Image (cartoon, rainbow, N blue to C red; front, side, top):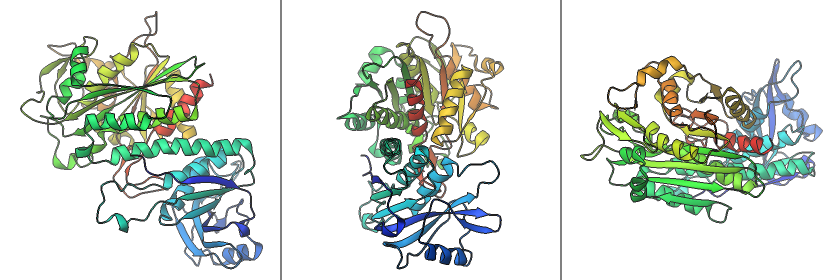
Length: 511
C-alpha cells in the first residue's frame, strides 16, 4: 500500500556541474526585498542577474512561494527554482529554523511533481540542517492514486530522485541524517496512504491485513484479535462500538523488542475506520472526512515500522483498536452500558463519543504489560479544533515530565503541539447514575473531558500504585488537511504525528 518513495542522496558538487531537471535555491524576505539565501553558491554572473530581477519576477521570499525561472547556460539544470524561506533571520538568530528549511524544501518538491530529478541547495550548517532539507523534500514528494482509473495518467508523479547539495555531503552524521529521513518519511507516507484509502476498502479486517503486510520483512511481531477473540477476552468497548457494522472489529498489536533494550514504550492509536456517529448520527457535512478517524491508529503503525527499520534500541508495542461506527438495528444505543476490558463499566450517553471507548480497552491492555510510558494518539474531539485550530495538536498527560518530553520531541520533529491541562474538577461531570463512568461530561472543555476519561483506564507501574506516565495526543485538526496543500503537507492525510513518535522513541532509547 505504501507509495513509492523517492531516492535521496547528498552531493558537494559545484552547482554549475550538478546535472538535474530542477535546481532549487532559497530566497528570504528581507527588509528591502527578496534576498538570495546564503548557502546557494550560484555562479557569480547568474547570481548577479537574479538579484537584479527578483522583484520584477514577483519573487518575495514569502513562505510557500515557489517560482520557476530559466536556468541559463551557466547551470547543468533544466530549470532554476526559487523557494521562499520567509523572513531573513536577524539579530542573534543563527540561520533559518529547521522547520523553515523543511517547509521550503517540501513546498518545492510538491510544486515540482512531474519532474524526474531535483537538487536542493539550501542553507545547511550542520547535520540537523541536512536532515531538515532531506525530510522536507521527501515529505513533499507524495501522491495518492490508489483509487484513480481513467484519470491516473493525468496525475503528475512525485519527484523520484532528490539530491541535497551541501558541503557536508561526505560527513557521516549528515549521511546518517539523510538515511534516517528516508525511513521516517516512509512511515509518514504509509500513514498518509492508510488515511487516504476509501473507508469501503479499509474495514477493520483490511486494516489489520495492511499492517501485517507492512510489517513483513521487519523485526516485528503482529497479533490480530478478531471479533471472537475480542468477545472471549472481554473487550466490551471495541465490540460495543462495532455492533452497528456488518464488518466486525479487530485489535491489532505490533511488537518491536530489540536485543539490549532496557525501556518499554507503548503506543495506542484510535482506529475507527469510518465514523458515522452511530445512532447519535453526525450531520452529512460532519461525515465527509470521517475516513480519517483511524489516523491515530495509522500513525502508530507508521511510527513503529520506522522505529524498527531505524533499529532504535527501545522496546515498543503498538496497539490499534479497530471498529467501524455505524447506525443499524444492532448498533449500541444511547444509555447502553458497556463492560470494558478490565471490568470497568461505561454508560454510553452519546454513540458519537466512540473513540474513547475503543481506546479504553486498548489502554488497559497496554497497561497490563507495565511499560515505562504510554502515548495514545486519536482524532478524538471537535473541541480540539475549536481550541487549537487545524494545525496544532493537543498534549494532555498525567505526568508533567512526560508531557514535556513529548512536547520537546514534537518541537524537534517540527510538528505543532501544545500542552493542555486535565482539570480534576471536570471529572465529576462524567459521573453516571448507573455505571462506573459515562462517556460524556461537561460540554465546555470537551477535549479535556475526553482526556480525563482516558486517564481512568491507564494502569499503574509495576509493583506500585502510581499511574504509568501517559500522554494523550488529540490530533483531530492536524491529522487530515481539508484545505489547500502547504509546505510539505498535502491535501488529505498528513501523517501527523509519526515524526514526533519516532523522535520520542529515539530520546527514550538514549536515556
